[in-house]
Length: 420
Ligand code: DSN
Image (spheres, rainbow, N blue to C red):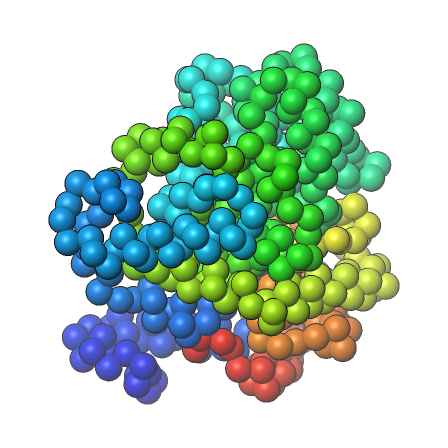
C-alpha cells in the first residue's frame, strides 16, 4: 500500500504504524459510517490536535497554573472556554475533562459523597454507564437508581421519573444517554429535580452539535450542569466539557482539577476551540438540521421496509432498530453489515431479552454521512443497503454483502470525507 504523503515523518520513522493509519484512513473513506457517536473532524481540527501544544504541562487554570511558560496555553484555554460559553449560552465552561466518563465522574465529585443516591437512565434503556449503572464506578461508589422508557411507546415516562425521584431523593439526576432517538424534555427534568432537591445534569454528549446548531432544544436554561463530549455531533476532537451556572463553577473546576485529573491535554483544548469556532458558523446550523432531516428520512425508509424502530422513529441523529422481528441477532447483523461496508454497532433495545454482548438491536445515526454531504435523497439507497445486509446476514449470503460493499464504496467515493 502507498504511504500517505500527509504523514511523511511518521512513515519514515515507523512504517508499520503509518501503514495502520493509512489503512484506517482508507476504511473511513470507503465505508458508510453509521455509528451515531462518530463523525469526521475537519482538517483544521485534525491539525490543531497534532500541534506542539502537546509538549506542555499546564496543571491548574488560566492565570493560576502550577507550571511556568503558559503565555500561549492560557490564551488557548480561555479562547476555548469563551467559545463554549457563547455557543451554548452558559455562564461557565471547563474544557479540561479528558472525555465524557471523567467529566461525569467530576460531577459526582463536585456534588455528591460516596454512598449517596444518584439517578439516571438505565444503560439497557439507552442511558450511559456513568449515570449510576452497576458495573461502573458510579454505580458501585454511589447508589444508582434507574429510570427507563415505557415498553409500549419506547418513550421516557416522566411520571415514573418524578415518582422515583420523590421516593429516592437522589443528589444527582442525569438526563440524556447513548441510545435515545427522541427529544429530551430538559424543562420537565428540571422541574422534577427541583421538586426532589437534586442537581440536574444534562448529558448532551450525543446531541451537543444539534443543540449548538439549533436542531435540538438547549438544556442551558434548565440544567445545573451540562456535560458533553466534543467528538460526536459537535464534530470536535475526542474530549469533553462541563458547563454550568456561575454558582457551580468553583465546585466543578475543583472537581476536574485537582479532584480528578492532572494536566489538561492542551492539544485537545486547542482542537476543541477550533471545533467550537466551526460550530458557531451558519453552515454548522445547516449541518445540524441536515443530520436530523437525514435521520428522519432514513427512519421512514427503514420503517417502510418493515424495520421495527424503537419509539417508532427519531427526532434527532439516532435510530435504534429492534431486529427481533427480522430473526437476526443484532451482533450477527452488525458484523454482516461491516462486511458490506456499513459500520454500525450492535445495541440492546429496551426490555431486551438477550444479553448486552449479543443483543437484539443495532444503533445507527447520520452525523458522519451528513458530514460527507449525503442528503435526504440518498436515504432510500442507505435503507436498501441495510435491508439487503440484514437479509444477507440471516441467509449467510456473503456474495450479497460483497455486492453491497461495492455499491457503498462507489457512492462514498463521490463524497470525499472531510479531514482525510
Ligand atoms: N461510547 C459512546 C457511544 O457510542 O454512545 C458513549 O460513551
